[in-house]
Image 1: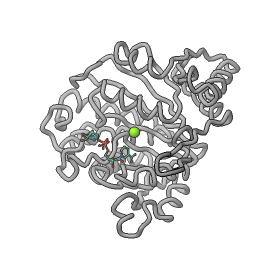
Image 2: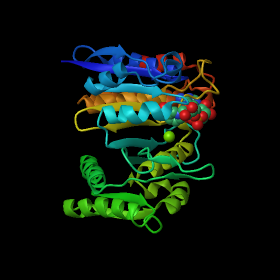
Image 3: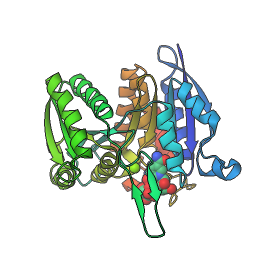
Image 4: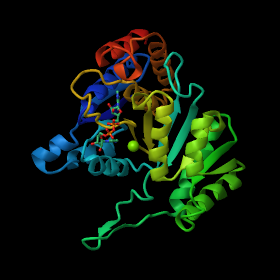
Length: 330
Ligand code: NAI
Ligand code: MG
């Protein structure tokens, strides 16, 4: 069976790391592995400048119809691109693993946790208003249905990993109505499913994860908290060049590094391809090729341990050299 993969490099280093991830997918493809057909589409600042539309209809439609999508990053137009793309694939959860790799000099080498971030609402639902010259407001959206759907996913996710508990991060002591609803929805489903939960206030989480990340395993978060706290966790494990993510929907999914377009290093050929390549490994898992996904992760792990490494990890390797080394190990 051939899988149709939509590829959207976007802006900045998206155009450097996404081709690297595609090369890795090509290297694991073929008899007896999966077969892929890649179709590249545009999105982001450059296409917005040219056409006035950051996410062309053709790109949206292609992502909605594809078996899976691999996305890089968009610059100033990020919100105009990634939010509708997540909607195109019907994604309700953003899965963000943050783990430290042996051989990489990091703040917290014992880190190994996964954020399950609500992906459709919260303060990212897009209800912002300019009410006067002096006043702007934002409406935060939280539904029981989205909170419960996220919790169902979290219960399945911990069961697959052989666990029986997850943590829920929120700030329901202050945002009593919205985060209260989120907390009640998530904890209610977990109770029904016989999964234990620990509630952690999001500010306390930020401190605790820095002091001892081994306290955490699977962390269920509202949208903004998941965005911010996963970047914080990236800082514990060597930076944004290492964090992949998966936007999962009922029938479709989109995979992207957590990082943005990195304008400070774009065009220099030194972007770390690992986050994008690890996102491609999550794509393999999602399509049912878990052993190929594991092979990719093992190759990345080997290269991180032995080099070459890109400058963000203290090395002198280029994107091309690191990608080549990953493929050699495959
Ligand atoms: P960023 O993630 O692009 O960069 C933050 C820092 O991490 C920079 O120093 C960068 O060089 C470094 N970095 C990130 N990825 C790296 C990699 N693969 N290898 C080596 N170093 C890496 O975040 P920033 O600077 O806040 O945003 C830049 C642009 O990206 C903005 O226009 C923002 O809107 C956009 N953005 C887009 C996202 C998306 O499309 N999903 C997500 C986050 C930001
Ligand atoms: Mg972010």
